[in-house]
Length: 203
Image (cartoon, rainbow, N blue to C red; front, side, top):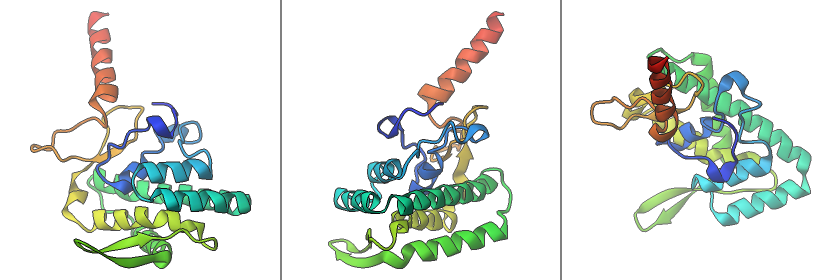
């Protein structure tokens, strides 16, 4: 896969934090395959994924214009957080125990990100509301961190898989009944693999 833009990026991970790691297509060439080319892209993706609403997205974009350097630094922290999540999820996908230092960093990132979150009453009970504030652009990471913590502390973490394509490092929760899902997207990586097999058979 190659960078196509936020509008074309599919959400196939089955979890917000997994979809966040999937904003890089092939980690062997991370810079060239990174969909988050700017803080604005990060805001657009987070809104597309349903993690923030339009009001919060507009507030974040306004803050970016007021302090572009802070926005760039926040983007770099977001990328570092994404690498951390990838390491943790990859361990589970490979059936390995995650590194404790990585788990400690994830805990700390979650606690920091949740500082600007508030509990709000809704019809179905209470829910987290993630607020964008001028003094903390990192609040954009709060819903992602919350999603990651919920995933690794729940049963679905044992269903995390990596795409079977050699040039794709996307991950997903395998929700198939027999846990046989191989591809992030059958119509993309799956079909390419089939085409390659057909080509080699015909040679």
